[in-house]
Image 1 (cartoon, rainbow, N blue to C red):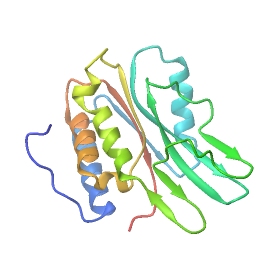
Image 2: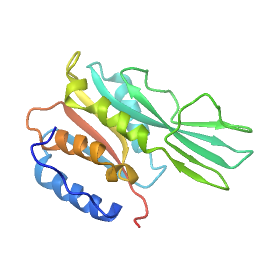
Image 3: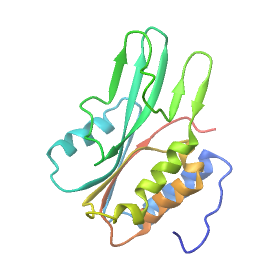
Image 4: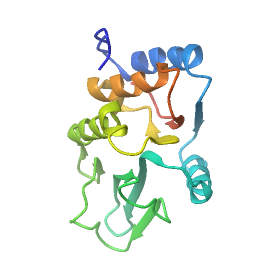
Length: 181
């Protein structure tokens, strides 16, 4: 996809530094980056915008599933336009999370599971080949970027590809702030 191979990063901090540098230098033309603390309304603002946006959209949004009874949280990607954007970005359950959903991150009192393959699928879905296979989008949405997924080569390369293109759909990136290791 890219003309040259990208470097692997040894930490999220190193990957974020490179991506932030690239964002500042290359992608000011068609890219909006929303960044802020968790729960500050970034994704909600995007959802409100999407509800009145009438052009073709490609991308994904992230839904948080919480179980109050078992102190469990999990995150799920919703592909756009394959699925409609959900009305709620956080869903609460009284006891346990639905077992029939595919989560890319699952956390409870005993463990944390991160499904890297979910981001490989996202990279494929967001690739230029897949994006232009049907109707070209006017807008691409990357909801919740800025964590472990940046250490996955194909995901990072796909995001980088779209950021450095001059002729591209408009991009909205919801950049999550988190503690760096």
